[in-house]
Length: 609
Image (tube, rainbow, N blue to C red; front, side):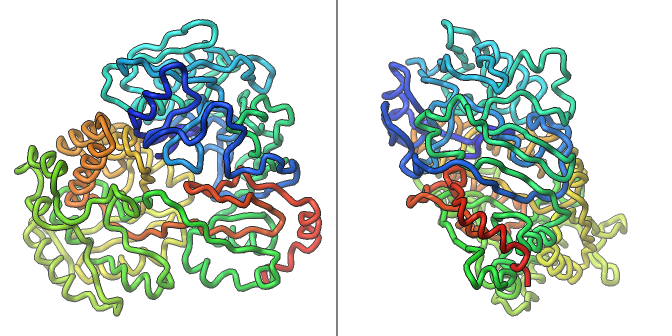
């Protein structure tokens, strides 16, 4: 699932049997795929060191700039790390799929008729100014986020009809119906904001004044747009809770901003910051051959993950007329030669993405059968016949760079769609050239995009690459001001309400939504609603397969590649527990060896050459 914590909402599915059994008397947590691993009275998560020392400094990097400390609104670019200043009702366990345990909430109870959920807040929960977190704060937060927050909050909270205070510490959320099984857990991912602090302030405006928070860190200092520093809250109200013990060990966390990833990488090797998650295969394979790596001052580790791989690809903007014909979208995919790219650019480290839920049981393979086939039969005639007869597979080549056969297929499709050659250019019946812009914010992606642009030229298509800074890119994406871009859609083992934000007709018209592609399909809408209402895991998987297959044959994006692991490089001042959680890096459980920190800091600057 993708978390709705701060600032984005999460993706969850509720395993009814497991939750219902736990929720009767007020549960300590919710699991969406089975019984809770941890039971009442547990001391800490298994993947933490409960006695980890506190202190030290962790320096991290961010790209571009920031201009707000309010991450909940559509305006502005939030500062890196700002989410750790706000506590949520529940917090995830990284060694369980789609499971949460109480943080601000002491307990959660789902009504027997599944029409409401009661969250009971801890009396000891406090904001950083010492004031208690109350039901009034929670109700105000819900109403404010839904009315004034990012569009995704309206999408995720849309099925809540009423919010009422119950008792001294309880808040009950009442639902439209009992079908949205993940909604109780989505609400658990809500931050609790201070109604008192925001009284008299415009919530919808950007701000560089740190809002009153409640989390394990608070803003200590900032240099707007260039850096921000957080200090661990020594008297953090939740520090001894089972879901918190052994976490948030670093004393100070600082984010420094860099122009782009290339500059940031060089800064890391020079010792300007401490840890980076690498996302470039070229950099991972070649850029770390420096003394600091060879002598062990910088460590490189690979941490496998068990999540569905994010769906990444060249995304069309269907609001543009040239991309509205699916034959055109299918044709342009023949210009992306993954095999050549993997061999020559990625050092053979990546896998081709073919599903929106790769690396999991949720990926549609083969042809529809069983329950999935029954679901799709209702839409026969509204979706391509190939959905029923042929497994989707993106174009494949031999890695030599010779893609003539694929381009011939592309030309045939383009001609069927009404395009023809005039000289070396592809034109429509009005004589207009087939031309578009590929919007990009990451210079490292240029080496992936430019070969694609060259292959498009062989089709008579004029594609131009435009790389802009992060702030401009975000503004243009929020208003859907682009032709094509590379985007990533993070998925989970329990997809649900977030699929509305990704693909639904309603979100296509909502500026700031994640439906950047602009998909408007009654079939996709219906499959999303069926997925959300799935009464059990088997039905959820069947609906996800059906949705995946319809998205694949919509040719809404040209799938790129995925890894299925985290690449982490860090200066050897950190220590981590013996157990690495199955569903994350577990960075909040790391701590700093103060003796190693002094040694590393004394030798900084000799790692880049």
